[in-house]
Length: 276
Image (cartoon, rainbow, N blue to C red; front, side):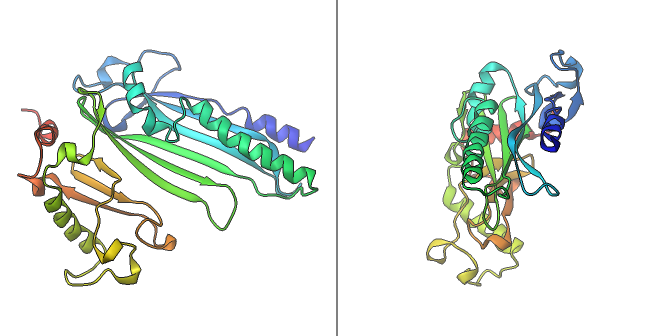
């Protein structure tokens, strides 16, 4: 009975919509309402923020320490055309909707819970999964979305990653780094200086056993983003350092990339300059 009451309380969680302008400035509006035009500058994409929560009907733990498995997500919702373009940033395993993500995760736990119960084990661990997608850059032409994903499905620790996605809205494509930077060799040299400064390494210091770079050579993260300050490179947990060291992020200012950018890259920088 206690478990049933607790589950009913959890189901009271509801989804909500917020209206946003560039870079996620939030104004709450009623669900289904039209967002006030004034909060959307003409040179940015309008969007709302949707929150989603769902739970497994199976509870883990003991009667005194009950826990439940949950899936939660927060993500931006754009126009239909833009939603289709950025879908891979929001649903990173190829799903078409947040409901599919939730169903896949909770179904896996439900199967696990049923197996544990059938084996007589009533004190198994709960799982959780959360994804927080946010708009980092929104110029109307260029859009960057970062998606922070956290989950736990047993073991010593869970999984935490942050994935970055960059788009050229006008040309309806995801941007590769080479779409923006023509001299990636020079970019790598500049980025290494910022990395060494952040890690308190001298120019002559070896990366040694403290880092996972192949052949002890610095490597740019494939995971990059566009910010108003510069190009951001994010190394996730366990990518280049031990799990206990966490993630690493560096930003290379645009002013240091003069002469290295492609035409599209220069258009990006121009779009970030103050309007006269």
